[in-house]
Image 1 (cartoon, rainbow, N blue to C red):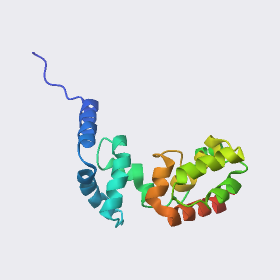
Image 2: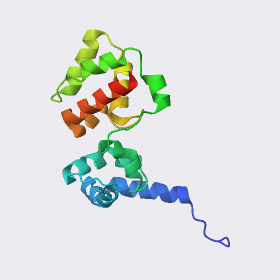
Image 3: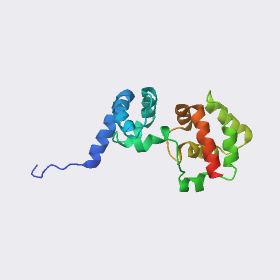
Image 4: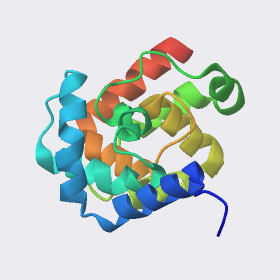
Length: 166
């Protein structure tokens, strides 16, 4: 070809994303640890590996992991206004107070049954739950997030959101 080579940045990002997906969670966690340390986070490798496994499919570069999953390591200090308007309902504080009483053992089954038994709207409960833990309306499966955070941190975040968002 007579034309010069052309670099396609988007194709390069795609290749890098595919490369990240092919690497093991442990390898990506090793690369992510220095970024966590830069932000003052000293988390166990097991936790970092679990988080990376949940989130690596959402990034094209290792450095993007921090913005994508910092909520696992730092509780939200504020709540996305757009998400609050759309997802925090009149009864959300009351429902989240009820939800905070559940243990993490078999949490998903227990919570789903509770929602069904009470006749609550699944979307309203889960969106408010996500908002309390993440601070916005995105992230992986809610019960994966709460499992990584643990019961104490999950309940602490929920109670803080209830207090702030009343």
